[in-house]
Image 1 (cartoon, rainbow, N blue to C red):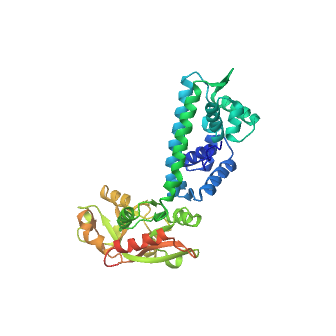
Image 2: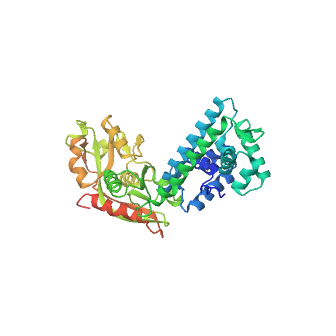
Image 3: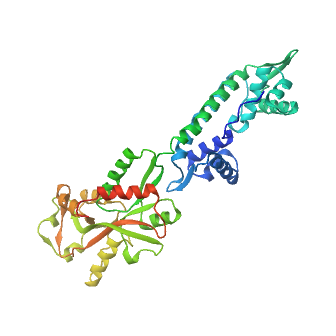
Length: 402
């Protein structure tokens, strides 16, 4: 009698998928599982090859699941939970089950099922179309996994111990869950899947990314969306490594690395800000007065910082020594609001009109300067469908003047 087809994914592969998803790292996952990194990588690669789907990709936070991987992880976690529960149930009976996800495989569970069905090793061998010694070796493997023999010999053949119903239930639950995997993965065939990972540099219109993401969530629920903040160096390095797909923020123009491509989207204006009621917001502030203030400006190397220092040096003035470097736009504004420091930030025309509602502006001889805000991505890199969709939606969310 022919036995059931073995599920596509092995139990050890399920174990590997869950470990990588929890740690977002092959190194840490391999340490948890006490196997080599190469063995773990091979298990993931074999699972991806069998399913015909990429499950993980390199991302800002390490190994990140793809759209297909996210579905596979849900199934794998359910199955691992059932395996852990079976181990507890076995131990409650006096067994000494170890890590069943390591020791068990589909064939072991099938052999236990076949012996229970047929009542003997020889008949189980016929049922599974294997040799009797194979059945005997596999039963010994099952005994080692659960800490006691699953069957005892009787005159008429082999009788199951109380452990067998637990293993049988586990087998049925795992097979049912495994049978749903390809159906759920196949349901994505007509959906837009993939990742849009955006690196964000400080600029006033960052909310357009949230608006664009909200549209994509509604229209393409299986897209994986991610926005991370960081310095220009950190984000461009992540672009080159493929950890993020696009970077949004102030452009560098001719100063941009040659391996990167820039596309402008809108313009923002350099503006000196202070908390409401700050003494410098009343009247016109001389440059000599401003130099003595505590400043909130972007880190060294950013276009705003370079412009700020170059302007002062050209006039024979020494840039202020006390500068608070803030990488994120909201934190820079918050520091200005809660202190007597003045900030130099860029604002779009739309944001500048509403600036008075939360901050004060400082009038001075500091020149009006424009910063181009746009998208940066690796030169020669073709945009994927998800990335192109993001840019289309982003364009619709930009301020009208852009």
